[in-house]
Amino acid sequence: MKNLIYSETASLDERLDDYDPFDLNEISQYHPEGCSCRVCQEEDTEIIGRDDRKLIRSTTHTPFRYICHVEIDRSSGPEPGRTGTLIGPKTVLTAGHCIWDESNDQKENLKKVKIRVIPGRYGAFEPLPTSKAVHLEVAKGYDKTKGGSALDYGILHLKEPLGTYIGYWSLNYKKWPKDPRGVSILNGPLPFAPSSGKLKLNIAGYPVDKPSWDHQYRGNYTYWDYDRAIALKAGMLHYLNDTYQGHSGSPVWLKRSKWKGGRVLVGIHVAGTSKGNRAVFLSKSVREFIAKNVK
Image 1: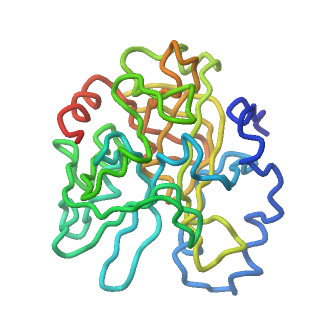
Image 2: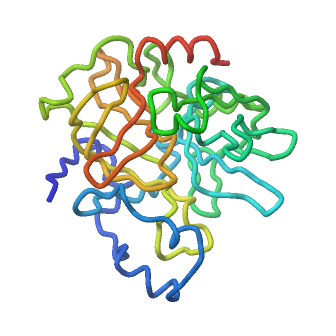
């Protein structure tokens, strides 16, 4: 069983509810045997031991207000299951496979699908301004065989400058109103080796298995977890934080003093197994991609 350390919750007592009366084991009472919904058809392979994810109730607080639900609307209706992060006034960072059309092995065609970005979503409640995506960029060399790899990252450009009002993770250290700690995107080495056991990471996004008490809007709530990194190899940061389908594109960050970057964005969650989950590490090449495409 993991030893969860709640450092990030010290100033968030009113936001995090440590008691969740609903458990994955209770899902059967909400779904009949043989249910064909997306959640029931996807195998949970990213929960490591006990599920330690916590529901974020006050999603308009930092840094959760920067974390977006990415909703793709096809002819069959809107799809849950994607997360992104504001990194500029009109820019959202996500996993490449979140904006990739696998059937045609190309990025989503915005003439055929609509993509809406919803910061701080809480079920049916959308407390902050939203915007549609007007342009997509994916890492050079990415294709459907590269999902979960170091090339699995991309950017959405928005019609509306949501970040100007909401705030965002910035390439350089930046403070926003009511966020005295501030935020930044990693520029240089990590403070501890991932294999040392000292590097503690946060992740938050919109998993499709939660919550069990709102079937209609499952996948539209922010869940957060805090645990340790275990390795950095081949451009991928590995960790023990619990995730699920829908967390793809979620920000992975560490909490430092404002003199050392504040909440430092270090990765983009893309995949995982029951032994460890992983993110694209924000290396020099990824940072250069961000700098080139941020708006």
